[in-house]
Image 1 (spheres, rainbow, N blue to C red):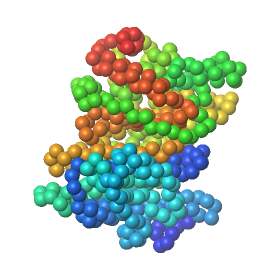
Image 2: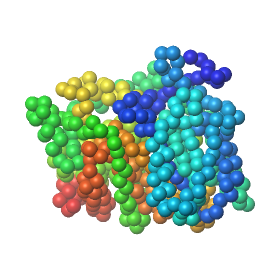
Image 3: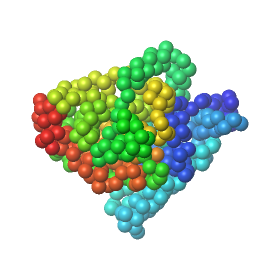
Image 4: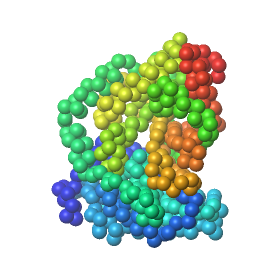
Length: 471
């Protein structure tokens, strides 16, 4: 397939294929929906906001992605032109002021659970919303094959900055977005047997062949023990982590601004990212619960290092296991530095196909049954906020963001850590399969994860074993 409706078509990327792959295991494609609202504590001019939204779409190729399939069912993508997109998409308005906040949020959660038409159809939707709490703004729904958290935030920032430029004197018009197609061509060239791809494959092959990981459970070795018993193999190192029911819940734990600042100050002092400290906290929690020095968790990598990657939109996340082996006599700070160096190394090779990674690992360490895994959870840390520009030009006007779960996940537990716009505290959002992980288990994990991070930040010279004893 070369063209569709007069547009050039392109293959989908590895990151997009991954989403299609796991969607097969869910009742419908709503598992790929991302729903969020952004509201501001001020009155809005709805006509100017609608114009700003349409302008932002016109500037953003990735938000105009359409999908199609050839006669063999192979998936392709193309970009609808601005006029075509404008005709196919509506920007609706919903006044929620006659409802409670809970009722309004429930309605938006309902929107998030409706799948998109997949072929030749817009893959995002915006509704302007007037909320019962006096805040006003937008609800955004996007399909994960065209948007991830970073491109979503960049798009919402663009709408805000276009709106502010139209409404307020002295607010500059935002700089242009970058071309999605230009970035897509680079990604496809990498995937077509480039030297960089060969280098990355060699790196991961070597990493996989070093040794087999071991499963760590949120409540200790119960799942590993059960798998060993079921398979009659006392040396089995994997376990069944997810359940056969993809129904999910979202549980959010809020870390206040002051303790968050203590963690950020530690990161600044020791020149590490919060992602490193989070990984250290998580892997130490599992070490405490299971008694293994060897811990592996899935870690999402944004792949937006360059300005063009940051501003070209689309979905770019690749997720790889992040494995650490630290004995209890290793100092907390030394382990954090090792994580930083290991992360930097992984970033350099993160364009590699994660599906290929998992296929090679399964071949290297054959499993007695499908569904066995080493990783109990996935982590995403989202450093981007809307604070950088746009809203700052409005002074102290308050704003809120809220994420709406789509109600399904193929993973037992997925933790997203983000900075809260109201006070810059941290939100720990656990999306989890209801049958695989309970809220009580998450409360337990969150409690000890925080204790480990704070003890480590206060006493970085202590060993891991000493930190575990103190918590």
